[in-house]
Amino acid sequence: MSTTGLDVFDTTVQKTNVWLKWMMQELHSDDREFAYLALRSGLHALRDRMQAEAAIHLGAQLPMLVRGIYYEGWDPQPQPSREHQWIEFVEHVRKKLPPQAKPRAEQCALGTFRLLASHLDPGEVRKIEATLPKAIGDRWRTAAKEAAEARATPTTEMQAAAEQELHKEQQR
Image (cartoon, rainbow, N blue to C red; front, top):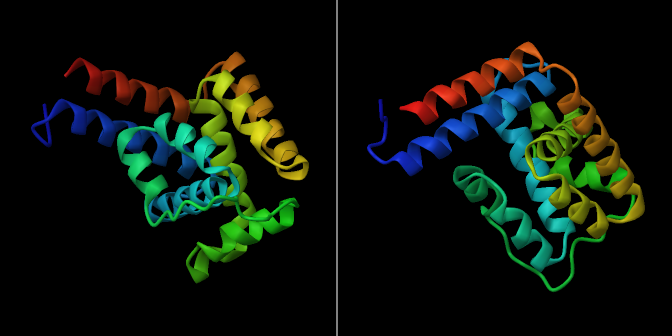
């Protein structure tokens, strides 16, 4: 049954819900708003660290509603933000979080990396890594490796439920 009256909107809402549920699992939280804020802050920090062309290419890979979150408030600059070290990147994420979530900034950044690495095409994941400074790229590579290993093993209960929910929505 359609909620919005348009299949394209229903599909993107469903995909976004799957992504938020995935983030909730990643963050060990049942707070959807926290999952949303964590995803948004991680996406914005990653987007700001990439060259504009690469950031646009990444945005095109995201579900429509997540793409809107990704581009929210973006002011493309000729040069990306200057974070070269992981701690600097985490601080960028921290600045975009509400006060109560700031202590979990690193978990939000890593969760966003793992989410993207597990939901994007492996070729796209490698392209993103190539655009990042070594210290940040190392964390991205680790997230991608963990995502690949997770795909190779039986799905977790949460992933199975999310995939089943998406499958139901696609059949409607």
